[in-house]
Length: 164
Image 1 (cartoon, helix red, strand yellow):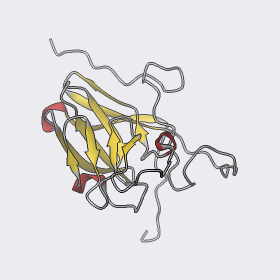
Image 2 (tube, helix red, strand yellow):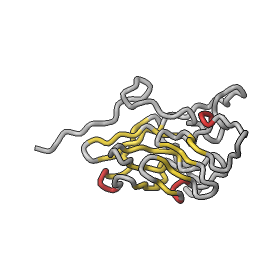
Image 3 (tube, one colour):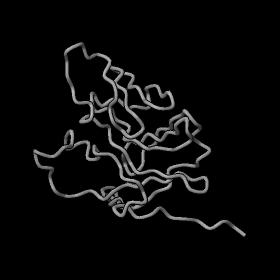
């Protein structure tokens, strides 16, 4: 039994934490399905979930600062919005041009229903990404960002009925 390896079920919504566990302007780090996940709540009260790895040097983003709108990596200060896109690279000098839209840390569809935060983990494909893929690299499979949970690509999160 020591060499037994479980196959994790993907393509489902999972309970990440209680909504009360993440206050506005705060972040919580979790490892779910073997992946580092950063769950936060913006100043507007909406929850979000990012892959907890900076695509620049692989530093966990939860060590950085969150101002309620963007997360700054603690290593070189790259800033990411709640949609996983890079919005600022402070070390760029005048004349250096970088397409920030191509730099993403990866996101997970995330909703809060009846006080519980749910995260959707998409099924992994067995295909190798082709070289013309818009992904940063094969180690960051979710660089395009999430689609809303209401999208037909993701099944709806489970709903619970209030107790009588």
